[in-house]
Amino acid sequence: MAAVHTQLLRLSGLGESAPAVEKHLEAWIEGSSPAQLIGLIDPGALSLLREAFDDAGGCEGTVWLIDRRAGELVACYNSGDEAGNLVGFRQPVGQGIISLVFAQQQPYCENRIQASEGHDDTLDRKIAKHTTAMIAVPFYFGFGLRGVISCVQLAEAPKSREGFRSSDVETLARAANLVERLIDGTLLTSLLGLGDGG
Image 1 (tube, rainbow, N blue to C red):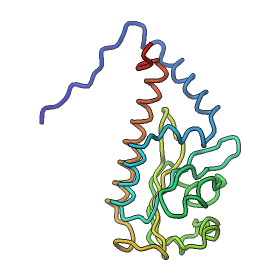
Image 2 (image 1 turned 90 degrees about the vertical axis):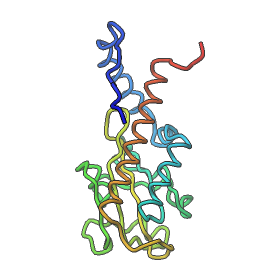
Image 3 (image 1 turned 180 degrees about the vertical axis):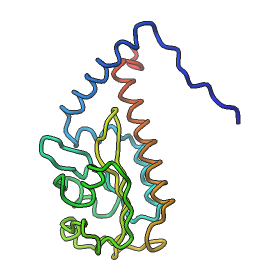
């Protein structure tokens, strides 16, 4: 396959606007709630995430977005049967593995999660199920860290295999990266007024 030349032709003067564009975008994101920002993930991107959760061997996956004012990560989307109980759950930053992934901006994978010192079982108790394995990756969009995407196996749910592999972490990280690109494209298109039909 031939390489694609990706350098874009820039409009004269547009580059000087980049700091203002980034500042405007950051202000808009910071002024939006996690419940509003989850709407940036369109049905196609959600489908991509669900496929990644399945390919990784997870029972379900969750998108956590940061609420900086409250100092919490908010479960804004969940692909599993317990979505009604999970969406809206707030995990304090500084507590649990999800917060650790957010703070360190590094992927995490654990196949005996209940034995992990960092595991916070508050959510398990809320849904009366037991997490046995977890993958979590940082989630970026709008030129910054915005949350975490996690994928779990539950003791009570059927699964194709026990535990996760390093390739499953790569699968989830790749999906998070693709969703980031889709969101960024949507944000920039909207910010520049492209496709408004005017």
